[in-house]
Length: 254
Length: 363
Image 1 (tube, rainbow over the protein chains, first blue to last red):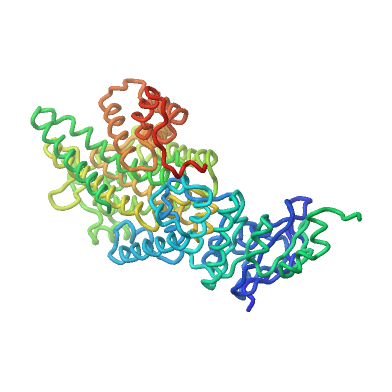
Image 2: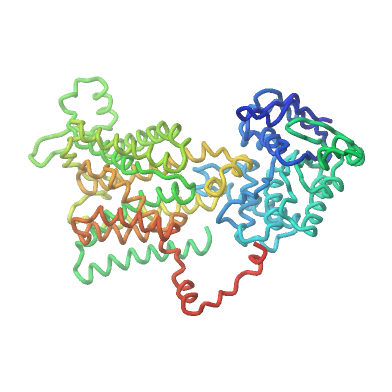
């Protein structure tokens, strides 16, 4: 079953073609990775899918619905969530509160109901609180729930971001370089976590630099170079792909 | 509501009562007049604090909303509609009890709006204005937003100055009291001074309860999230444009309510209440109070407004607020109540770093 379908996607910034005619599918329940050298257009591709950037042409279909013209919050409401390469946690809020924001679209208390603290909002709040705590436990940092999210370590902040994204109850999770800035041990932890998330039935699409992580956990890989898709295959096949080796290691003159 | 908040609210209520008892004991009841006015200004300040501190948006036009509330309520309750009695619409208003007769100072009978419908009309008008202004303006950020709201404030100020129905440069006077409930009137009546002091602070307490509820809710978290990272808030499904608009409208309504009540309390309203310097003053108070906390701006608002209203700042009134704004932005962008004076002093005298949380080591 295809969950996400990217078709003939194009995106220009002035004269630069950041994404050139890229097409691929993400099937339900898999971990798929997008790799490529710096400036290959990976993050742009992510921003296009999440609705932060509008494509110049092409379509993005999520759960059989075209989403490339929707705004990020509408896309989030349809069950797609994301993390950011340069972690974007909410300043001045605890780890738990950050995750609680993630429950936003799955709850409904508005301005008036919140100000008057109507009885049903208390129940909803309690559910949000329990749910968020559960997610912090899931990512393994429940003990830091009351700590200001910004004073956590880098790896812990990543975990909070993942818990926050999971709180939206997504069917597709986009991870933008989840291992960036992490040490080997932390990368291993994140890899385990991503597999755990997949086992919950959540499809994962990630952009990553760290080859070991990508090769270990992903089932399919899309390789981008200068905005174009040059390969799409399983990890072992990608490792043997001549063109991929070329763009990563340079020309082979021998 | 957390026990901490309940404690703060109880402390405020106790302080309000103690101050009144203190003035009665020392026979300085005249202070209550300023303290009542301060309460109404506080209503505006806590509303603005929600917009600035929680949602991270600025408005240099809130004196405009204050003015809209005050002026509309004043105009409707003080204008004499008797000459228009033949007009079917006016007649309709009379038969529904929205227009009521009263006698003015000179014994003449006037026909004007009852304060309740006047207040509702004023607040509705503010609501709609804030909505219409907010939709385009809140697309702007930072100093562009500040300038746009400043423009709005200037418009209101000039409109008030140029409109005959609003008394032009003289403003409106002889505004009657606002009978909230039978026997409970917001007015500057000498005999009702103590009563009015309690009414005003009652409104402030009610306002604080409502806003504290809001901050500790799903909506409050979404607003703080917008402040923290708009992009991430959107990715969590928060409709940031809508939330910014709603909190803008809410804070405008708080400002307008403050305008309505203070106008009835003072028995009049003048153009200076809608001026730019008033807006700057409110922003300065919220900034020095520390924005992201309702109590800081409330405390600083009481202190500074008290000094200003008692004339302690002399002719340099507005200068003081301008200077405050500059100093706060330079040295204490989180407000002076959050300067952590003690830990700074300790660091100064005992330069060993305080034991930090082990979590910070990795940063």
